[in-house]
Each structure stands twice: as structure tokens, then as C-alpha cells.
Image 1 (cartoon, rainbow, N blue to C red):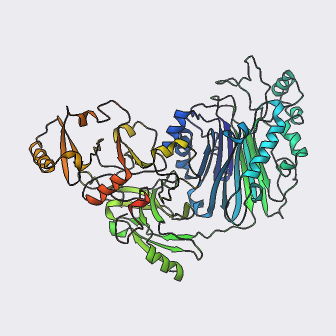
Image 2: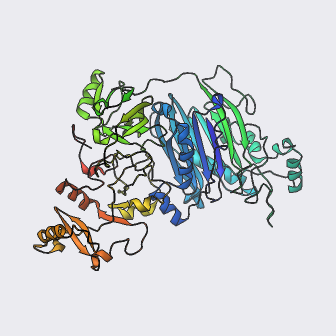
Image 3: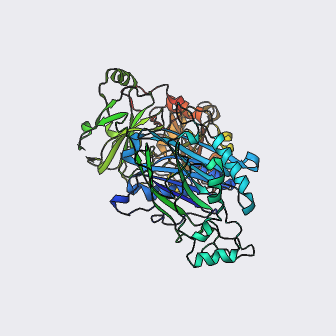
Length: 614
């Protein structure tokens, strides 16, 4: 397990973080999981609104870098500028269950989230593990405040379930972040002399966290490796020089990574190995800072751990069986078997992923796990079977993985080994309704549906059980925003909330109620549409219920086109009720949301129907 902490100081992400994540270090040291804790991510109001609608740039960066190494985002949680991301190799996903997140604000007496802690807890091969990323109060004299805030975080964060309700109830806890502990007593000139002379051990006994570990009961049992790297704060941005401003802050090890094994009140020594007879054994293989990153006044810190469990739950909840290659559409048959006691749902689905997918919602296409057959097969321990439709399958050659997504646990309960798909490409492009047949080089259009905060949608757009922290989202309840493909191309990447393609040439349109057309106007619109097929450029076709309406470029409707107003991005605005009614009344129109997908609101259908396209 690799753990990284970095106070990024509101900076933009760097171009490369490969060395920070300790990738390409050889087979023996390759990580199975990576936890990344960030502090002071830019959280100004305009940036937070954008990050609420789309994935923030830091998360995008880490997903881009880690996905080629087969890491998948397991869970993420954000509290203003404090972010925690947990990644794992795709083949470990079925063994990572009971994933929950929580956060605790401690800034301004608990009302502000600039300080506090965020956590992700999960069961790893049957053992409960918690990752806790904290940003504690700054300044030398606030040591007692840091202790109180940490105690508050431990007390406030509670999880659901029969086991490990509190943070310290977990079998293993990783505590890291900008903990802001300073070096006491020593003069700044002696501190810098010790750093330059490589006699860091003379600073350890004056480090506030080292002192607190032996005097604060709340820190009993927490272990940390030796601080054999220079203090990570405070640097002049863009350099490796300590603070040269008028304040001249004393260097300090503010950025730390600690761990605790349940029931441990002491240890074998700093960074050492626990006795072999323990239920859990943890070895710290590396603990270092990365001086090559200069975008912040903090240096990032990374630690690599080897964790040995006494037992291992290595049977997945769902086993998936598939042929080694799909060369014909009729071969796209998936058989799966659910373990006894598995809590299935009628909203479970099986996703087809490209090798190197970024998160569980990053599917190419999907098929619902049918409820009637599934219930019978679960009861009798038989294999259920589903089949992907021909139009949904990707064309061309590539390596893919199937994953069973459990809506109950919001996680992948079973995956396959990579297999080949080699289907002939369709001639002269694909149908507008073929939402999954484009090649990997094409960029996705995205549809972002903003639902009410209390929505129970089973959508894969719901990243995890942690609710949105953006108070402004409720104001957009019932609004569908569809960026046009032209404007989406300029964005970094669509949110993990959706990966679907819209019809080619999708342009912004504004839908008016039929009442506004006036009596007898719809049939005339059809005649005008037929007469203007020769390429008139001064009309825009507006789809209506059962007809098309053409509008003069000089009319108020044409001038209301967001692109005519020069607004970017161009958006189509619809109310959900209107959009759903139009889909029901006009099934043949090629809207991007015509075919229900896991990103559709639950109101589209009460339950997936057997034999029908979702």
C-alpha cells in the first residue's frame, strides 16, 4: 500500500506525478493500493462549482496517470480543499467491500471545512482498514488545539455496519496529512544548520508530534518511520529554498504519515516489523519526501507499506464466466454465479470496460442483471446468463474486462480476466442511437443529470455513498445540462459520473410547449421542412412532439440559441419531467437519453425489463 500526502497550496496540478506515486519501481515493490491525501486544493466558489459539476483537475490527473498501470479509483471524498482518493488494481476490486466515507469540519469551531479530516474505510480481503487524511491547525503555539481537533475527528466519524463503527475500531488505520506539528525550542539558525549538516536526529526530540506520541493518550499505538528527509515546510514556491520572506518561518515536518494496528499500544520500534504472531503485520519499506515538486510551499511525502494479513477472503461475491474472444455478436454471452448471502438488487448491472479503465462508472456499455432469473439462480446457486446487444458492443479490436456492479454496496463485486473483442467496424458510421459503438480514439460527450439531494437514483453517476457537499446544487434540481460535443472537446475529461456518447452533430435546441406553436402550425412545419431540404442556411430545425419546426435565423427563438449569444459552453436546458414525457411520446427521436442507461434518473422506469434495452 502506497500512501501520499501533499499540501498543494491551491496550485494547479503538475504535468507528471509518476515519481511521487513510486511507479515503475519493479515488480517486487509494485503497489496493490494507493491512497492520496491532498490539502489546500483550490476551493474558491467558482472553482468549487465547476468541480461539483465535473471532476476536479487533481483527481483527473491521478486517474490519467494511474489507469495505464491498471489502477482503478475505488472511492473519493472531498471537504472543501481536503481530498482523499483511494485506488486499487482492478483485480482486487471484488475483494474491497463495505466502502464508506465520512468527513469532519473543525475550522471556525466546526462550521468551516478548511481544517478537519476526511476518511475512506473499507474491507480489504475481509479486514477492516481506514484511511484518514487530516489538515490540522497551523502555528507553533497551536499544539493543544491540534490534539483537540484530532480527538474530535476520531469521536465524530462513525460508520454504519456491525463492525468497525469508529476509526480506531478498524484493524488497521493510516493517519496522514498536513498535521502542522512544529519544532519547539530550537532557534531557526540551528534548525537550518542541522538540515544543511545532515544531522536531522538532533531535531527529532524537539518535534511536537514525537513528543505527543509519548504523552497524549489519543496517539497511543500510532507508529511512524524515521524522519530521514529534510523538513517539508516552508519553502519559497518554485524553489528548494526555505522561507526567505519577512516571516521567515522555521522549517518543520508538518506533512506526516502514521499507522496503527488495532489493539497495539506500543511497537517494535520506529518503522520496524511487528511480531509474526500478530493478526496483522505491517512493514514500512519507504518513507521520504519529494524535493523535485516545487509548485507549493510544502513538499509531498510518500510511504510504501507491506501489509500481511493472517487470513484472506479470496472468493469473489460474483463469479463471471466469458469466452476468451468475442469475434461475432452472438458470442457476447455472459454467465455469472452469485455467492450465497450476496445482497443482489434489481439495479445491479454488468459493465464492459476497456483494459485501463479509470473508475467503476467508466464503462463502454452495460447490461442489466435481470431480476427474475437472478433471484432464482441465487437461491439455487445456479449460473444466470445475460447477453449484450449487437449495437452496444464496441467495434474493432481491443482488450476488455467485464465487471459486476452491485448497487447495494456501490462497488464492483466480480471481474473477469482481460479478453479480446474483435468485431468488424460498421460501414459509413454508426446510427445516432448507437451510444457505445465508437472507437477509443473518439471523445465522449457527457450528459450530467443534476438530481435532488435526496434522490435514490441507482445511477453509475453516483460516485459513492458520500453525499455532495455543494450547497448550491439543490437550486438546479430537475435540470439537465448537456454540453455540446464541440465544447466538451476543450474540457479535460468528463466526470466519472457519465461516459456516454450523443448523436453526431448534436446542436443546442430550445423546446417549446405545443401550445406556443398555435393551432394548425405543426402540419405546415412538416411541409416547410420538405421544401427546405435543398440546404437553406437561414433556418434551424427544432424537434417537437411528432414533428419538426423550422425557425428563421432572425426570429427571437433563433436569437435565443446560446451559441448565437456567444455563451460557452452551449447547453440544452430541459426540465426532467418534460424530457421524460417527450421520450415516452416520441420513441423514434434520436435524443442522447432515449435509451435508458444507469445514468438515467430512476423515474425513467420502475425496474429494468427483461429483453428490453436499458
